[in-house]
Length: 388
Image 1 (tube, helix red, strand yellow):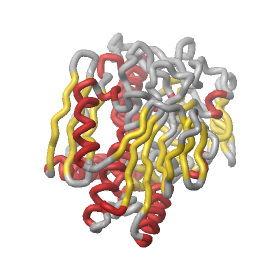
Image 2: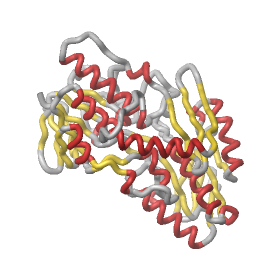
Image 3: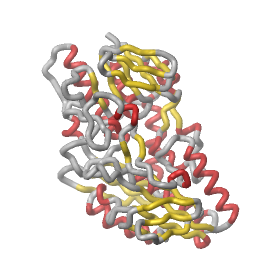
Image 4: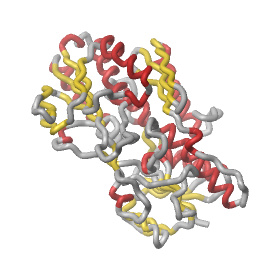
């Protein structure tokens, strides 16, 4: 039995580890030889974390967990012939777990922006650009995020890292004694950015903006980005020496060019078992999957790992002819420690409740501790706490 897992991120790595725990021989295919821990990459631009320390080497994970590892670029997913084509060879499979990420909605001039949720090395670019402005001694920095017009539920919006990066930059400039020399603005095309975290959390964002002396610019569609400005649909502009923007998610062309069932944004339709309908041997997990029936939900690394756990559990019980099954719908919730450089806020949302707890000082160390714990637990150096 040949089992392939595609993608070396949260979903793919967790699925691979879980399949090994069930005793299966599994091959992970990734175009990078490391997993990038995006939730803590917010500290790279402000010098609190190195790029190397934000990586988890896949070859080290391979040695610990005993899976097969292939570092190749996937060029085609051939569902009909049960083959994965890469830049080097063709891999056949009996069962497939797709844990790939997502693309970004393109807005004119987006090459003039940088994203903390883009390719890993963009975090270093942001650091370098920020240091240039610090050396200059003043400037305008605009941080924001957008959505996908084709996605009415907005589950492809990823705003949390934008808030975190913004507040961390404010704290960083304050420590440099330059905060009053910079204009920081948070922008978004939607009227109520951050509302997905819950009404309570959204209302509390005003206090964060006030505390970190951040201007806001909401409710206007972005027309284009230029080297020194952001232009909106009404032709008004925000001057910008540095624009940091997380665009809305879109399905990858790699997946759009398959026969897999997809929604209007190119994400794969799955059932609550994380299995593709009418494809008993294909599971899709993480960002590549369409989240349905939960319009308040959002794509997070945490949800990717939940889906990895659910899909491998269901796969295993199918193989051993057990009737036991899990639903990822039952485990859906938003959870994050929104770091601000000198503190944080704990945010949690489910279908029935919303929680936001300010955590001055200790919250920052709590998130730093999670980053350390995540790497150590994945490498089997300490006990893995269920659900974390």
